[in-house]
Image (cartoon, rainbow, N blue to C red; front, top):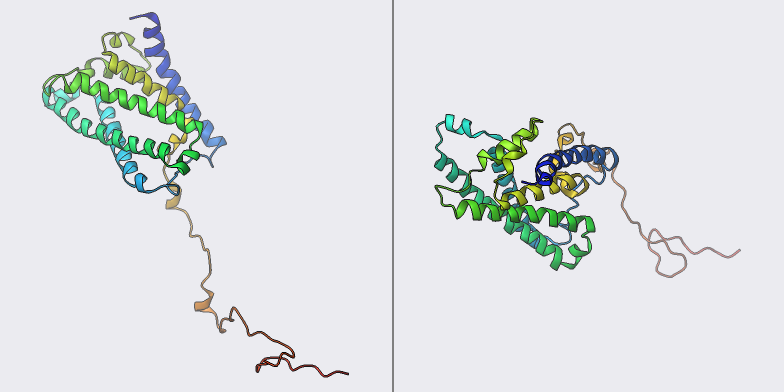
Length: 264
């Protein structure tokens, strides 16, 4: 493993990415609260969005949960809990593959409508295009890594990332990096990790900030009165919104009309 790969990719890049994530979120919250939104384009097009958005969001939630479990839970813990390696492998690969398919299909639909639907395409900024690329690349690389090293390795085999990638990731969080663990990791996983770290770095500066939002203010938000119901509580009869036309000297006077004036 080269010095560039050892010190930059597996030590410097993770810390730079996490720093930009934290500092960027603080900066964005302090300076651009009105821009802290997903900038939904639902009013531009809803037919494709109706199925693609739930597929992507539910799929990516399951994928994130799987990553959290695979990277955060040490192998010794699952073994101590009595979960054999092949059982864990099945639990990770089968649901993970389904979640990955949901994510890819949903993201494909979202990108398709961005390209095909004119009103959505015109509302897509350069920032959005960069975000979609940096979102699509790690997802595709993750799917490639899963297929090439896990599915093709058989349901009872496959690459055991919990002996290399997982300890490396936890060493980064514990401020005791161990880049040597990444030396023999398959290329597909390495590319997936680098692309994921780049996505983390640009996260606060895109519409992806809505992921870390929670509408907690709505719990204590007071009622907003848009119109008082005076018609139900008033003591006098409500006035009509119109009245008869009052004319003079037309020959079509009604009972409310003013009689034609007499000349002096």
